[in-house]
Length: 291
View (tube, one colour):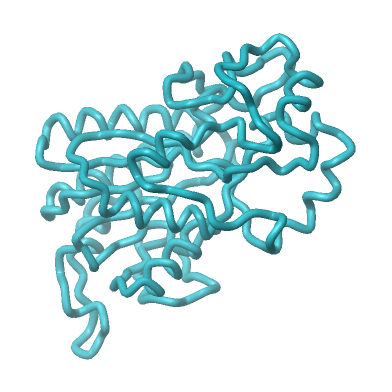
């Protein structure tokens, strides 16, 4: 599995994923509406709202001497393209864009014969933004936590997971792996962490979670090769939180009535990555303490 199309390869997670794949010997095509500021692989400008353009992109082979010419149908598609968060555009625009583009990528991949699709779902499907009046059901939050989309953005991701389940059912030989990514951080973002330490409420909205973009890339690579046929989803976060304070103390301060499913040690993440560890072999390698 060496020939990969990445949608949204110009975004924060996408840049890290494209770089990580290229550095590990994959042939990669970045399909996006705009070129990447870190152009490590060929770029193909596509409006993912147009199914025909998406089908064309998944069959594109480049020019005569183009490095991407060696394959026409990719071995897998990594779908990261989306309006990446709530409140960036009107709700109906976010919802329409994210649902339609996800459908188009899934459908086009199946039409051209791709059997594996790895795609970016979101931690927001689990009830974010959390607050004392909207706490998580328990911690650490795992994949069995109730799905509680609270915005047009998170609803679009929730429906993306349902699309994956149903389209896989229609095509039983395919694999759809949804990565519920936490808040993606690049090393340059870590300078901001110090400003959050005096007020645990600043980052309560996702239980102080984050994911280093480079570990996002690792999770994608693991998902490309895991022995799985079907549709499944995994929380992908760092092993720690954005805070210096221990996680159990943070919970007692902000969410004192929330149940602990097990003992929380030190600064460990409250977004459980145990399923990703067990099934994908995922283990975070980067954090804000080791920039």
